[in-house]
Image (cartoon, rainbow, N blue to C red; front, side):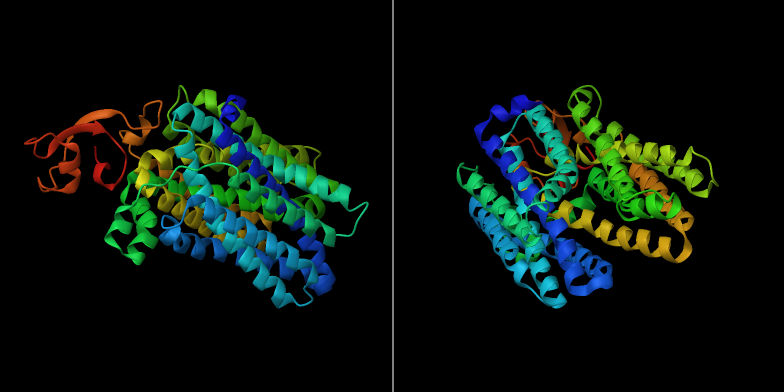
Amino acid sequence: MLTVLRNRTYRHLFTAQVAALTGTGLATVALSLLAYDIAGDSAGEVLGTALAIKMVAYVLIAPAIGAFADRLPRRTLMVGADLTRAAVALCLPFVGQVWQVYVLIFLLQSASAAFTPAFQAVIPDVLPKERDYTQALSLSRLAYDLESLFSPALAGLLLTVMTYNWLFTGTMLGFVGSAALVVSVALPKPAPSAADRAGGVYAKATAGSRLFFHVPQLRSLLALNLAVAAASAMVTVNSVVYARGVFGLSAGSVSLALGVYGAGSMAVALTLPRVLDRVSDRSVMLSGALLLVVVFAGLGIVTAGQGGSWRWPALLVAWAVFGAACSMVLTPTGRLIRRSAPPEERTAAFAAQFSLSHSCWLLTYPLAGWLGGAAGLGWAVAALGAIGLVSAVGAVRLWPVHAVASAATDDGGGAVVEHEHRDLAPDHPHLVNTSAPGAGRRHTHRLVADALHAGH
């Protein structure tokens, strides 16, 4: 898997991602302590509101940035976002009011909403070979999982020798380091999109979302995002409730539960590059979604059980399998989007995935917390499990077996197939650009599973 790091451009970009994730992890710990200093016992409400603001920024800002992203050099956009995040991190230690925290968090997450889709969209161009890109996706998944384990430990170590305000300096240095690494490499230019050529800002902002609703396998991805959000919200929000409230364990047990979830995700991320050489993305991703439903059923039994030393180990097993199943869905997502969107639409497609997936978390995070607190964990498991079941079944039905995104060449292009566009006029630009003179509506080229080829 590490052979992909021989590519200098990707190596610098991956290191930039790791630096930014480390900075984000330090900020998470520092922000919790800052909220407690400002709000005392109401710190949980402050953090919950900050998390909601984060999701709103992701949902609203990513498509808006996508409308203009291709008009800016990729490196300029990514470096500008990093420097904005660094500036916000530098301001956070000096705030004294809750509203100031909210404003700065919105600015920070808006910059992240600009950086992340641009980063995701450039990697397929840097690594055109399918196998290399698959390895890069697994490395990215590992980076996210390791950050969730490493950053809290690093923050705890640093807090033994400094106050939490200095953690924001570490955050700032992480983003500055990310910007420096991006500056150090030349990035390929994106192809101009059809919406950009037409000059429509609204069309550009909604191009990615419209692609998701037109292409069957991307409609399935919407359902898969919701299934993953249901499971991950259960883990993120209620691990502390299970560990401390239900089982009466120490604070360290919360870290153990979250670590087990991350370990399950990492185990799958390490093995998927080899698996995806033999098994289609569709089989892996849909199997992961259906596995989430099985784990929810097991979690219901653990939650409803009374006494017994088996329940805590069983919960840890459920968390590990949750992590593995979520990784089965999330890791190949970039491959699916790459195959389902033509190069000129990739930035918009990744921005849409970023926005739409986080809108799912915007639903499931409060549901996991509020329903669990008001009606009990059993009802939270039942509700999120029902969402997972409906989403998984919907994903299976929405993703046809014959979808062309399941077949691709090593360089990431679709299989070369002769096909016919009966619904297009013979002078349609797609037919003119890819057909031999006089070929009419029938032609041959590498299929991309976009709206024009959804049924082929």
